[in-house]
Image (cartoon, rainbow, N blue to C red; front, side, top):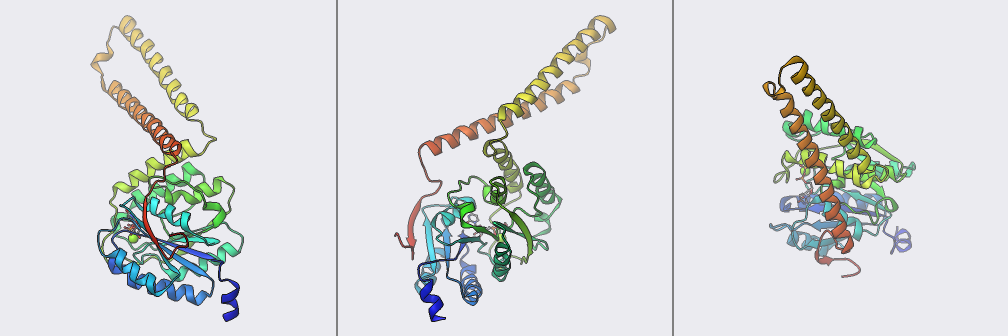
Length: 327
Ligand code: UDP
Ligand code: MG
């Protein structure tokens, strides 16, 4: 045992990343569960808690825990940036060969970590958890979220059952340097597949939240779907926006051309007027306005990203770190 420790003193194998936003009650039991699993595995590890601007006691409880064990590290954000930025900060600060994000609220079970690693050892680059028996309120497991998962699978061409499960395992080279925005932490397996990584999914346990409340409402599904479009059109370089929107534009031009001919025909040869049946017009107008808004949203997204990237700005600001080499 002593020999194993001395051999691996500078070589972290596992980096577990935990985004924390107001999770004070969960921190103690989480540390206990994580440490018991990780110590048992006997591999050199670190746990990086990313404190995402918590307004409760989370940070001081994390500091207490970090005083006990050097492997428990903290990245403390200046304010709340959201789970995606917290995940990205964890990845940026991780020194392990394998990176494992996990929720702070013990809904994911640390006991599943060895299972994920077993799959990586089989040669996969990404192993994604599947909450087969999801223990959230019925409204979160409803058909909308199932439909969202189906849609993501269809649009991305990367077929998983559950994109939203935080518990996943990545080989370092698949995720280092990755730039994530919005709700995109859940799409890492999709990016990875597009880059040629081998991705698989395994069922993992899921428990009901014991303390506090979920930080999200149902509007998250809409955000996830909109972000998926951005991922598809802006990040998947093979899809040129002009082909997609140009195509829609051409079809709508053609449709309006045909409608004009039809209207003229009705007016001059049938002696009726389309003004008496405005519904199709309303439908067409709202559809086109919808398409235009989505297109404008994508364009704006592109400009905002170009702006941030050109400034080399980080999507989060770190106030301090604890137990990290460069503090
Ligand atoms: N979280 C975060 N920043 C936020 C919202 C959430 O770091 O702005 C963390 C939260 O503390 C938890 C994880 O992200 O560790 C998942 O959040 P939650 O359990 O509320 O989501 P759900 O289980 O409903 O998906
Ligand atoms: Mg949760």
